[in-house]
Image (tube, rainbow, N blue to C red):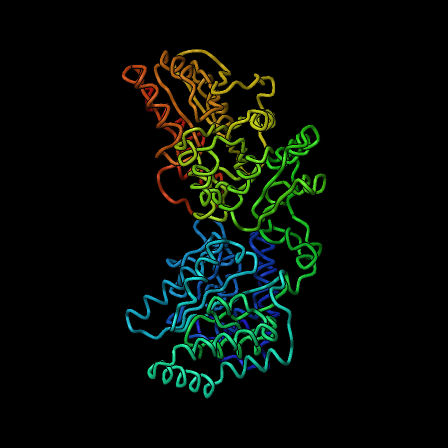
Length: 618
């Protein structure tokens, strides 16, 4: 196999041009084989194989720098930089990350995981290079989806001022930004990036500026731009001051190499528009790109997941209730930021297409757009993953809560999510959401309570955030379905000695802990907090009668439920008479791995909590 000859960075340059196509196929076979076992981002990686090969052939890594936007498409890059063995432990605890990590390799220039950051980071590296007087090439690789993020356009606007080289590769696997005009486009690309042309252009510019010909320069530039509007694609970028090259066939290694080498000669920001196909080379991924965006382990022949779900997950419950609400209330609308499948809103979209809005990868815009919908008399529900909702913090405060608009925020993937690691763990939302005045923050104990909370939130007429975890929905405690009252907790079992006060997903853990404590001869109260903001004073009154009080949350310690609950206990004078145990995730960035392993490592699993309680009982 040709791939066997690539053991470290730079080895691809020893491969002959005649073997490029075979190497690309071997890489695809390798990725399909390994991701079918470990799970991971398959479709985006299959689409970027030739592009990545071309980058490694043109650039001198690790001196030159590649910033992969989001990082979903970085597997081939990892393979070509000597990390082949790491694919056996891809996304597993202690194994190789599914995203670029600077601590993992000198060839990973910047840690990514969230969208639309690569151009900003690349521009920063370019300015750092110029200040230091070094000569490395900086390349940011961004997808057409990530380009919908406002941050990307902020960076493009800034990059247009550059007078030194900065390459932006637009990996376009879906949205056609410019029509491919074939030979004319290729001809113009060649003329505009040829050395004689660039030297002549720079010489004329300098001569005119020195002789006071600024007006003539502006006239020439204006006339040139008017002509290019007729024949050159990518004028949006050209008008921002960014040279546009393309479109280029992203599955032709030599064509991409040629475009990249041309881009290296441009003294300024240059965009290389590369057209690729998501899932390229694997039929199931080509036919179902959404399913193979982040795939679970699957059967290679059929493309079907190996593990099937027996029970509904929380996203399924949310999807069902949203459709019910849509039927009952014509003013209910749904908003998502490029995640209709992941958030469960696809069914709502199919049933009520006129009331569904996918705004692209633009969480900030999604939130203010929802505020506008609410101000216009509708009841919007915005579904965003906890980790991505962090980007809309200002909009929640400024545009939703200050105006007290009836926006419901469905915070999916709250808590530990597992294999995607630090950038995707939803462990900060209770802290940042409960700090916002006027925002009601709730967390359901089971699937029925999620349904009740969603209906309550939409009908409440106030801003509400409901956070729920990834994975199978808890179906215990069905008999405890007390109607929801604003700011009121849900006492499930009332006894004495030990009091467990749990938030959302931790209620299930608390049930298991209580069962163990009862076996050991202890009496144990269990309270479902329901509301993190505002906290119910009744919880403190109940807890204050116990010897040991334990708060449980799947969130970091700082600013979370446990700190707020302790404040209430102290205000009411109960804290001095009890032993308080605050169970929460340490204030750290939690790496990738199986969720159950991560819970144990962070001390929020059943056995870890029981150990703390037993120690306190001594």
